[in-house]
Length: 320
Image 1 (tube, rainbow, N blue to C red):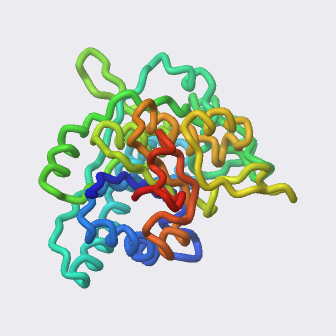
Image 2: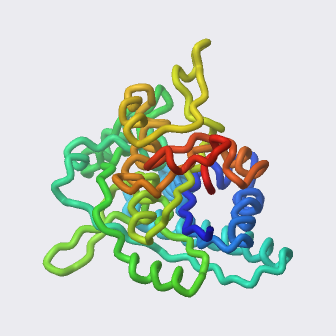
Image 3: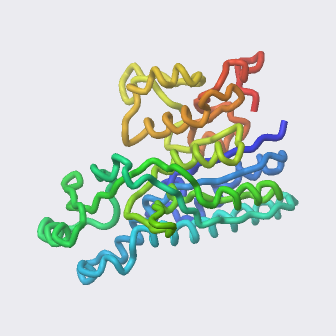
């Protein structure tokens, strides 16, 4: 059966201090091309936390301390969407040419509508950009920035993380998918946008990439979502001697286990999976690591959150 799959890639899966974005893109895209070869439609959504941090650091040196508006957060998100999409496009095209697959790939700089009354704006918590001393942070607070001490490493600006309401480029993404083009969109959660008197305006905020992935998967009619993270499985009692791997969860069971998962780690991914599955019994979401997926693109390694147990075959595996 041909499926429409959204893959949500973590920013750390696409480059670190030790491994370049170009090299990681090659590794990430190998298993994804297997799905393209099988005839599945593919949408990629990626994180950009480390990459935005690097850009903000480059423009956040002391000599720029009073000129931070020279590169707004929205501009950083837009730039990382472009150059990260470019590297993913190159990697996918290279692998497809080697495998004699004739498909096109396109990256869309993506904007996302948020609510100006979202509670997140009243309590900014998402750290972004470079570290500053206490004295520098005080100067920035006087300039209207929200600054917070970060684990003894210095002070950073914190911004809101509102819920995504509408992806502006959805019609364009749908049109590309209709023409069987592989689409890269929603990078970094998209650029947060508000409408004011008919005008689109960016806001200094960061939208959770997994929430945008779920919204994008729903809007484009995907029946499968894959969230790539740092572990092979979701676990109960993670990090303890009682740690237990979870292979399958229904939406209802996943909701019951929400208290097991850390807010800054697995919880947003489980919430995104539950939101995507919703009440649709034919939807499923796989949460696993890139390494596990690379070894077995059939999805036998990882945790599936499903709309119904009927998606399991006679061998107890998800019908993928």
